[in-house]
Length: 299
View 1 (spheres, rainbow, N blue to C red):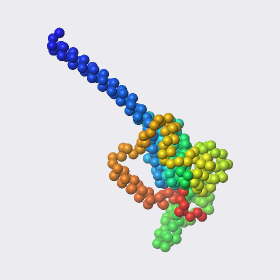
View 2: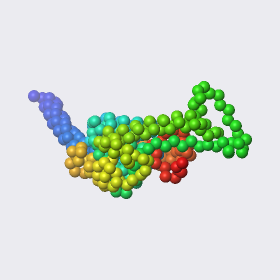
View 3: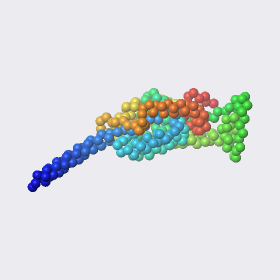
View 4: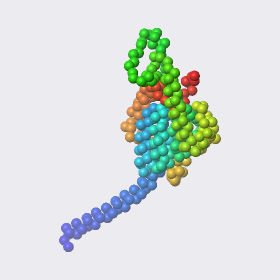
């Protein structure tokens, strides 16, 4: 055999050995990484008034599809918000729970819509002093008739249907309009009661005894069957890990990882909070709300 042929053969053998070693290392790494990545818990935060459900829905959908996420922790610190927005999140949690456990961790406040979105979770954890409850519906419509008369503003409305301009701010509600809105409010309230009953396995008649719009502590909520366990955020993490069968310390994952920079994220959150603060009193006043607002007078 010539020296060139021996040299080529040697190179070939070395290449095969290197390739085999690389494959072995890769497979070992895959085994380790898959074991590591499978110990993840996705954390979805719902803070402030629930107005736009899209970010929460996207996060839940992302974690539901991700096979490396073994469980989801829903952190709620919210007085509630829009009925439609709360119901969209409620429905998505129902869908996710069929695939992997979802544990709710209640923060300082998880009332009305904040409570509503916790209902379908696999387990609910609250602090003893968490403010929750406020099972009810509120609709606030400002009346600016006297102000408009004082500054000389008159609204002209062209409509079809007697109830079409219900909630027009330059005049008080008519009896028919008030009756229509009260019927709507009662209908949505019954939906709330039904979902409390079915999600938490509490008889409807018992739910009605405490579904009067009032608030109560996390400790009381546990007595009523709305909460499974008293504890803080880390207690909820450990419960989610247990339900998912995670051994050891789980890795918490946020859906915000794809945001380019911390500064950009802060600016977005600050801007959103500013806009929300300006529009909340106007836009939310025109829609039914699962909302706890102690600053609002009750007539």
